[in-house]
Length: 249
Image (cartoon, rainbow, N blue to C red; front, side):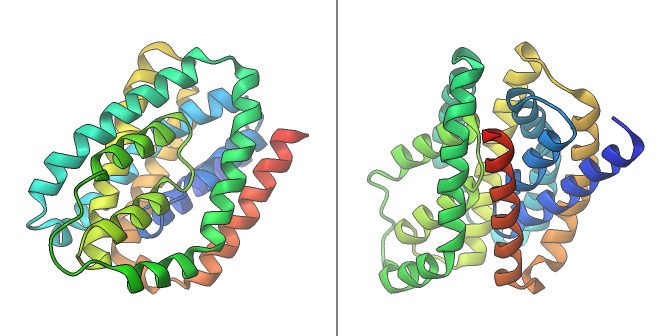
């Protein structure tokens, strides 16, 4: 990479770390950045998963106050997410690169739709939020399925987690966001460890994204709630569309 390309990847890591803590879908920033500087889709995805792990850890630490009292949820849901992440990572490594090139644009388009519809999803969640006991039936299974998605690619994983937990768990959205950061971070960590052991990793970009996403995670936990959701969604949608075009072309 040139110095300019390294700067682009590092800044993308900062943006992704911030977005992941606040909303989710930071992959739609760093993945296109790695494609833009010339990495293949699979190498970009593997390196991206590893690089975003420190940002998830920083975000979880930043939301530690909101995590208070959620140990039981964490111990119940993290194992399901981790098993899903292992499955998704194995699928990524087992399937041919052409399958990834075919599947990922569909994932990105689906993620863009979810992000664009997030205000409506949030309103629907508020109308249907349960008042009483948690809806545990099926929640662990859904965490496993979401973990598969996160281990394979993961764009908008956080938004999917928030939508699922917002309906199933009667708690404040900021507390659910803190739980989301832990679950998504666990998925990225486990998938990243598998990739580091057996896959082709671009360690330079991993280091740049790791540093950037850590800074972004700290900024997101501290200032992220002040960002305009509409502006943030617009940026993510635009970058996602770029990624789709880049993969297809």
